[in-house]
Image (tube, rainbow, N blue to C red; front, side, top):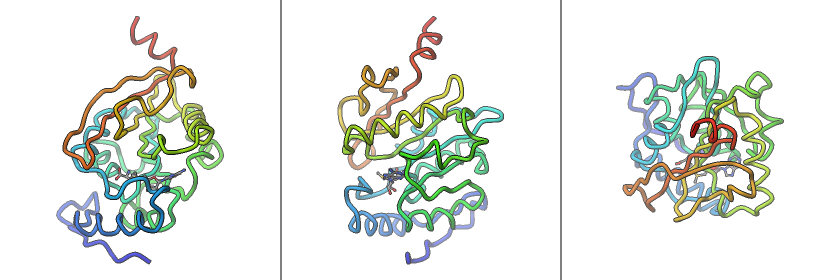
Length: 212
Ligand SMILES: C[S@@+](CC[C@H](N)C(=O)[O-])C[C@H]1O[C@@H](n2cnc3c(N)ncnc32)[C@H](O)[C@@H]1O
């Protein structure tokens, strides 16, 4: 099992392990499975905050986070105003999943593969997701797997919903034309190792309506 994170209880609503403890745990998971984890350390707070700023919080809807890892982005989502009990976290790594359960007890935590989102997400959430916040290493996945994940995520979105993704690359991590979606780079987080860009994607119809 993992070693217990050191909890700082000065923030009772969000259990906060020390950054060092979180990084050490994350690194161990990366060493165990580098390709599946996709990064050697958790996102820096600046990147996590920027992801949170792209997230819609709307009545009656939920936010789904794909690949929360140790919860760096999750914590930013909660501190920026997403109620913890309206967060659905989908994590495939069983050790990360156990870590998250301890850290975010009010969130809905799913131990599963984002590729099967339509099957693993509670039915009450179907079509009621305001934003899918993804930290998955999409650019290193086979195209078929990447496309399955993105299509099932878009199938879960509410009207006007978004898919937010960061990437360490210079270009869109998703082929917009091929997937029939709209998207653009909305931010750059230089204070992250490595620096990352944040992309926001929507359905084509929503992008057209927003531009009208
Ligand atoms: C790059 S890490 C990001 C962790 C965290 N969100 C952050 O920004 O620090 C990617 C995470 O996605 C998880 N993951 C990878 N593929 C997955 C999949 N198909 N379904 C669910 N989680 C997945 C990994 O276990 C890992 O925790």
